[in-house]
Image 1 (cartoon, one colour):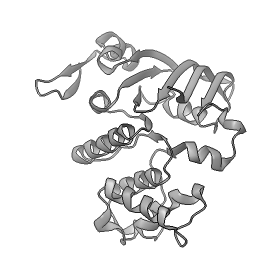
Image 2 (cartoon, rainbow, N blue to C red):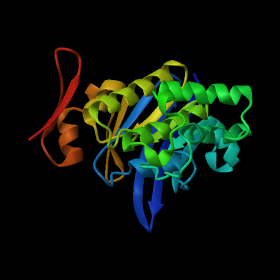
Image 3 (cartoon, helix red, strand yellow):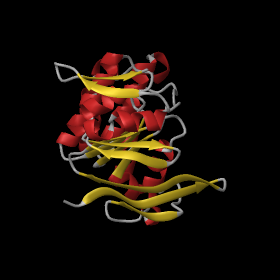
Length: 256
């Protein structure tokens, strides 16, 4: 199966300092991959390099088989939808119009949606449980609802790869689990998800593969229970920690 995204020994230098060193990663359809690590570990830098927003100083990046930096903006948008950390757009536009911005890569706009565009917007609103809010203004809804609206915009883009930087930050547990279900559904439909998070238990619950980072380097990689062993967690976070599976299959992360 061809990779939707592949990184081979990628390094990134920012301000004369190595921000990433020797990172390798491969995402194929149906996968959810979680990036974990403390603040400043390199998670956002990795995502931006994967999309060609940052230039890799070493190694190779392929987005759908091509170097993302040679692709047009539209071509990249058709391959990957990017949701940065805490998007701040709270313009007084309707939720459905915010979601419709995801159709720009397909030549549409909120005021000119063809039937396929409208169907994509409606499906994204439904997936993110936003149908009752579709005509509310973005500056009138809660922070969690705004987060779901931005996620719906990414879904409406209909790119096979979702790149989501801390998509559950600031969400309550129920909303975070709902976002995890949305990511799993996207992967189950033949797409893939690259997400970053500080929620170790949530990553263990929804990810197929975990890359644990610290100081721009990989500490461990693999299936969640393999990559998140006590030694790796302790090395990454500087505190003794462990991942535990409960009797109902859920996970908890405990630190001392």
